[in-house]
Image 1 (cartoon, rainbow, N blue to C red):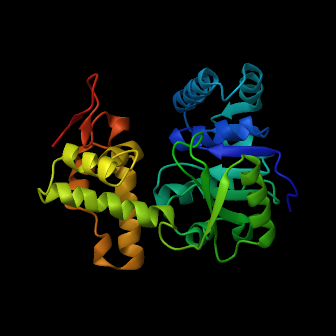
Image 2: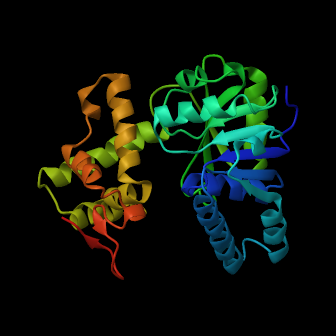
Length: 293
């Protein structure tokens, strides 16, 4: 069994993956950032560089620390680059079939003692572990978005996760100076079990004509003291991800209160996924975001 994590592999250079690579490198871990195309890797590295530049401008990061962290990150399109990693974190799309394919491709590459983890925000850890050759060395390490800013990480054990795997994953997470919340392996865990139904209800409120996009977000910012309105937050998360999590809740808990709002489904079918596609509940193509309803 791995006694100490020294090298971290991250699968997926998107928003979550590059954020995990960012904080891991800053904490002193060697990092391999893997994705299937160089364009995705380049975009991930650009995000890391940009986010570190913002930290530098705010005075929360020194030039020396930034340079050392960037030097710790290597990249590769080849999954074999993960062969000597002590801990591998999957951070691809919130789609169970895609995640299973990733695990099936990476497991033969990993050293036997390596821990494999997932950043899933909703899918059963026990079920995902069954797609691997190491259920006892598999765990959920769910980072919040944006990773460099958010302090919380949910640790989620599957039914087979060993105590050693949990303790080593806990040590790695604390090494990032993150706060841990331990969740049982239930659909959407804790944060999204509470957050996503609220967002879904805000979308129902829009769908039923109770209020406009702007009115709903203003009401929750000023009436509930939320830093961001629920529809603005949905755009930030990604409407496809919001829908995936609601579907996991609806199917996993068999309760109609988790039924995804038809308007959410319609936006996803239109390809209006929020900030990443420039349109969602707001249109981001101009200088100032404009509500789309």
